[in-house]
Length: 427
Image 1: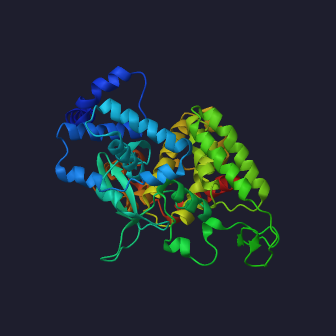
Image 2: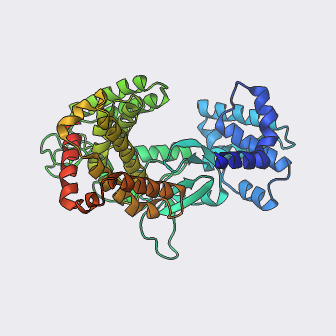
């Protein structure tokens, strides 16, 4: 709580005192996030809270305003309307064209501000980080530790070699990645992944004739068939359904389209578990069932991601997203252990698996502790929380004596992991 008040006090002193009256006047209406971001920059500049160097760095960013104008349509109309709002509310001396350019810079260069667990909070604009180029095979990931932005390498980067991050979800099929980058950032990606010759994992389907995972479009690279069914329209439909589901407010309204999407994918009998949008659908279903407190269903999908998806899409055990997924699985296990101890009916169907929750939690937290320093940083709040959870588990498990830990060995863990694999396979 003390940290919350410190954060609030800093925010008031840094910027909120300049915008509070305006927001109060507009209440209950809330300005769109890019408008608030642009408005804040204009107010900070007016009040002399930005140095000449900081303002110059902002002005040096690319805006792509002409590309937005050329694209036209509803998006351009919306940009013009919102930038006019930022201009009017800020009462700036700058002309509307300057504010329009600044607004486009905010749209193009902002990152999504998240918690350490990648829960979206807002946007973040840092001119230095905005200068980092994109690659569909990035060597670094942006994380946040409270108000601090961090770049975490996910593989070795040699001296004088360029750092790359992913502007979008780089697990998407190549055509969709290319389309999204062109639509949002106005460039055609030519990274090593996009230039790769031969089948890319994210583009492959199972061949409906020879069943090998080597179908690219309507051609199989193994059996040579060139008249395979075209699933591009199915893929577009499923991505649209996934996006519509994200906009629903109630978990019950999200689950139905996700179930339908999953049924469509399974009916095709050609969709690998690592090809999008299937991984995103599984992840969303795990979260939504968690919100509905349907613990066994959530567990099944989380375990499917743990065993079958993350090791292939996020091969580095210390990848920040993979470690976060691991934490979420561990937290669910804590919940299941508590409910199981109370003989709660919501977890009765898991009794047949005879899960040893203490052993499982030990294994998961041990795995996390071994990777969290690389994923989030040794001194990060996230790492501290993981170590604290591990220590709490040790205390709980040794209440009857330290012999419990001595009996923990690889064969004990393997037995529990085998049980979890069966749950994942059945989901």
